[in-house]
Image 1 (cartoon, rainbow, N blue to C red):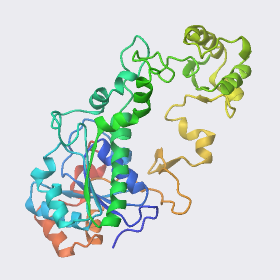
Image 2: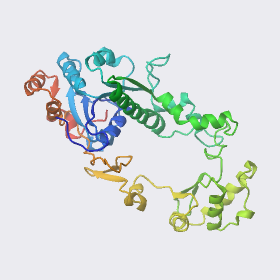
Image 3: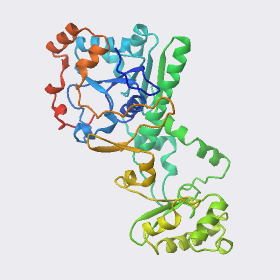
Image 4: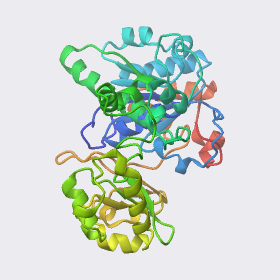
Length: 400
């Protein structure tokens, strides 16, 4: 029996091998849209170094957990039983790790020929760097993305871990898994999905590679239209210390902005000429510094000036646009983004709170078809632990 969740992926069953970064985010995306995802967790925290109670581990939301000691053959056998029932698997270890556990694709696809085996790594499953350690920043450095982000004359800016881990890793893995599931529905055959963050982040740069080849995007960081070089695609400080962002790339939108903030477009420097950018930037900097962020919102928000206030994480959920569309939800007291995108006919249910390792595992195993006697034997042997036996279940241990 599969848990009824609603959403376009209702009925899809996924096994997630607990990891960090892109793998749990990809699993969250599938779970948000209705997939029944079981996390196979370690018995002990992996020691990432970011300590937080479980309810704040937002990318764990919506799933139940089975805590298994994968060093024990009984636990591997249990994992394989779950994988036999699954439509897809998600893992984010270095190449060879799953094979050493006895859970590699060669074994799993023989047992379950329809399985979509999703793998996400930094460098990919092969190549000279395949087994080297790394994190988001390393992968986007190699793809060319990091070099293009930052201001002129300054070091590359560190853009959180959005480009490698989440955009180039998690989202492309989730996309690849869904594509492979569609194909498996036609062919009856599964396959391995190999998502590499270095390649995914390069994919996100596809347009920039084209502009660079055409000579439109210069290699010097911070000198182009979209990288803080242009004064009309920029952030500006306001009188109260707040910030606003403007992006009127098209002339009609620039003219609208200029008129609203008190400039005659005909007399303003022509920003289609790069030589005018320093003077135009200074004029805009001085003008926006004259009023508070709230005052500029009164003048510009909701117009065609291509304007927005720069909101903090605390402010973003309180904006009228976010409230009108219920873009954020509160789960177990934690404000977090709502599932996306939206579906007109098969909207998903609201996700449940992140659960500690082992929480909900016995019920999940039973609902996926494992006999109660087998579950009892696993627990008695120490290969399976209930949530109450694991420190993280009390919300005090670190993230994975």
